[in-house]
Image (cartoon, rainbow, N blue to C red; front, side, top):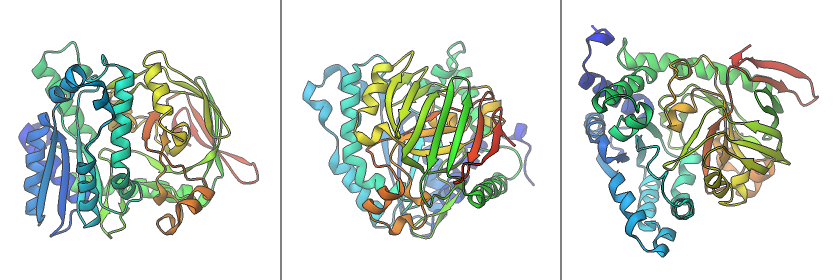
Amino acid sequence: MTLAAEQLTTEQKLDQLAEVAIHVGLGLAPGQELVMTAPLDAVPLARKIAEHAYRAGASLVTTLYADDETTLARYKYAPDAAFDKAAAWLYDGMGAAFKSGAARLAITGASPLLLSNEDPAKVSRANRAVSVAYRPALDLITRHEINWTIVASATPAWAAAMFPDDAPDAALAKLWEAIFATTRIGAGDPVANWKAHDANLQKRAAFLNEKRFSALHYTGSGTDFRLGLADDHIWMGGGTTAGNGLYCIPNMPTEEVFTTPHKDRAEGVVTASKPLSYQGTMIEGIRVRFEGGRIVQASATKGEEVLNRLIETDEGARRLGEVALVPHSSPISQSGVTFLNTLFDENAASHIALGQAYTSCIKDGDKLSDEELAAKGANTSLIHVDWMIGSGEIDIDGVTATGAREPLMRKGEWV
């Protein structure tokens, strides 16, 4: 018998979240290794996840913790040349672990404002160094060669950024409840809840795959934007079977169906509907103009320098690697809370992503060379950054190869 949500303690809900992360999000196999990363303040959840991983038969759980204060010490005391360095040996090791069969789990929860007062040039250089070092391991993730997932832990710094008017304990409690609610924890059987939700997303993706639209056209609220879809694109939603044969749901929560846009077929103006928290800095009021698939003009009311440095990472950073559709009525949107965390905020609104494409969203993408993928429109970049463009004011049409239009979303809702 399942306890009602209000009868469960935070500890019990934390245990449910860990169980769902291992058995539904990750789909961990007996005998499989797990590489987990987490903020230092996420230790309670990380320990629960490790417990459930071992109960599920994990051969080894290796957890790598990040500490905000140590990160800030670098910006305060490190020599200038230090910001072009990254722990390549660490990322090489992670890549080797994935190639040998390890699963990947990331716990998000770092302060969204951590680096907001630091030199944007140093932040950009440090991020680029990490992107270069992590690229070989990231390729295995973007190709879905391994089973992986991301879950969230409430942390004091994140809670303070979201609820600045509340006392620290009250803010932390609010954030935990928001995480539990949006990840289907606490009411009924969370594993069954997730399987039913996954089935609904799969149904929506199947509908779009039958339609075979060649482009999407967005209008409303400062946006007039036409986005072509990659040749032989595949819509996905919810879970996927990784290259190692294991079924996983990469993002928890998730409300999206997504695919790969064509890197050369984006035209028009796009205005962000929510702020973007990127590597510890906030970017607000984003507005960009695309020509021939490439950003030719970009502005922001806050964090514009960070935005421009982001899109200058490499040539592919000015092009799109993902497009996702999310109804305005999603639980995250209806919560009325801006999480200042892309894992959540991207599931409150339809969004696009600058940078690297998910090649699993192209037919036989795992068998194609980089040149063949590029010919079909898949973008290549060191980055993959989602930002929200959907709202209750946005209409989206599907455009067929013949130019015929069909309404997909009106005022942010599926037609």
